[in-house]
Length: 152
Image (cartoon, rainbow, N blue to C red):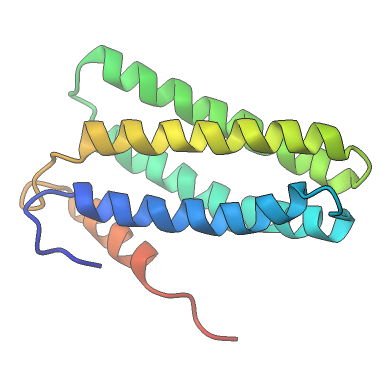
């Protein structure tokens, strides 16, 4: 990841772009008109085992970094995080049944939109945090998330 910048915004932007691309790859395939239960299951597995835990960790770190931010920002991020958690839970629940494709598509669209809002809000709120002043755990986490997954 490029850490040449003096703020964490570019690092967050790259991470969020990667997460959105990864999610879009499986969700769009799972929401296609000819998608079957295996595509839904692949989306559920990625969301439940990889992306939701990453976002939970990001939420924890963002709230630590922005604990002294204005109340409106903290409340917005908390609300968006709760929305992502609830929609992610519901999407996984519906996707595991493999029988409710229209509902899966509706929830997937909402999840993708909520994730977009989360990413924008986090980048706006935490993006101007100086790398020099950022908590080490935030920088370590951003670096870890930027590393490519091991080849199988």
